[in-house]
Length: 460
Image 1 (cartoon, rainbow, N blue to C red):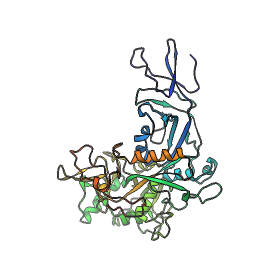
Image 2: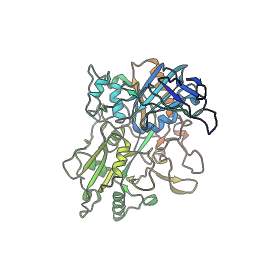
Image 3: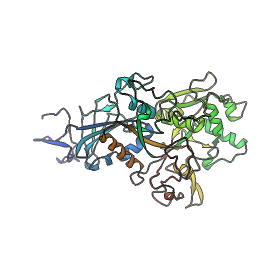
Image 4: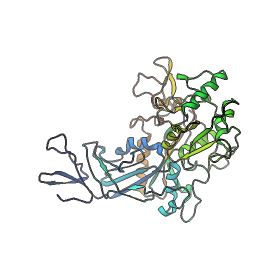
């Protein structure tokens, strides 16, 4: 049997001699007695998208819609790597054979740093830059399986590439100071970028079971009623104090107002390049980088000399692993709300009494757990939520700009997906409705917006 360098046998359906039908973007070789061999045709356009890990669900929900015939698109997986961190989509876009690759290593800020870098070498030279290759290629695709709408292939090869687009948890001028390099021969200024917003993404303070119980005890001792299911609340000011250089709360005794509590505190912090970290800085510390005249900010802390231990991670999974660690202590950090709270292990807490994931249900006239974790921010009761965006260089080709416009349109469209931790803004204020668990899908719309500037209040 002859093998193409980009060849893959199509899986047999059942025990019969029938084989899956190859998509139009492949050729077919019918060696007698072997079956069809799907060979992916050479790609004309390749686009690499970098950026936020919290945007993975949104991207994967709409990626196939970026192509002329979504059912003919092949999802190209990076070996055993999760599609939520590294994935490609291959098909016909605008009549042209196209591969779109998404990788979020390092988070929102890392994608932004790649976008402003003129070369991959310039990006690799930045402190903390991810050294691994970032863009899948189709050099050794092995196994195009499935049928219409479910084609899947696997690629074990990749290369370095400067991205066409970056998916961001916030705007391109809202990451921590120092994340984006100063303009030079190697890096363009953020003023040369443009973006479109995609919707409102929520974040929450998550804690391990030990701290959850301790906060319950603190709330009860202070005469505060626990929320739905016994959910405790943390003061926004207290968390800000814990994670800022200027703050005085650095022990469990201070945080819980219990002099006898000597339990060590571990902050499961994201790296500065993380969009989740940028969101935490904006919400708790008023720390918005790059906005002229914006003052009153606290400085984020990550290497204190005192009692708090910080564990830095580049991805959401790192923060969750830290929260779930068996090493003990009180563990706390910020996690985006597309991560639905598990039945056990870590849990979200309310902030100043506002829950991120329990809301009033008009169908039952009672508070209930929101399976999509968005109703509280959608109606404005919970404001730890920021507008996400897709960015590109203003000098980018018309093809890249068209891809950005299509991606923004698809991600922002409430008819295209039903994402956890994400409130849509495509219909606007008058599209919002109170949460009703008997309506499916339940309300998706946000009452408010930040007018593409996350330092502005969330207002209707």
